[in-house]
Image (cartoon, rainbow, N blue to C red; front, side):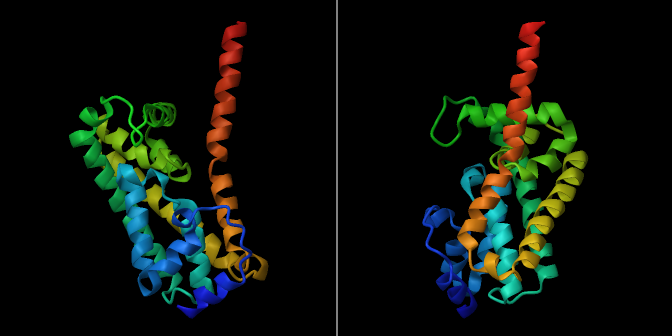
Length: 225
């Protein structure tokens, strides 16, 4: 995959992301199997609880960028279809994991992997937004992984869950990948992939920050009244 190597050679060595979280390094390391690897990672982040730490947003963005530069030699429409399907299947898998083994798993004491704070935050997100949380959660790191299991634990109506999950999966994967595809034609962005990956990560946590600030204001008003 020479195009990827050339792009990497022009990227400033910011070294702000560890290799296993750097989307550019991830795609490079998989060579001709890059698209398959990206699909598996998206599936894992959307459905397997251990995938909550994976770089979903930035990985989709960089995938679109590499399609634009020709480093991934697959039509953008097919890439979007494959990623959307993987995101949906991941959600379905996460739902059944939550429905079958979620209660016993989440009732265990805190561990390094399944921290209660992650589950509690996802519960709050789900309670506040209801069914549409399945769509909104796609754009919130960590929450998008746990929300599917929580929906399964809560035994959310399967038809409703699958419908919202399909809409959310398409909206998330297509928007992030297409954004990377079109911005990939801008030389500065193409030559600063690591900086863009970090920016995507920072932007993706904005919803969490907003919700946190709103929650603090609501608590302050309640305490003052």
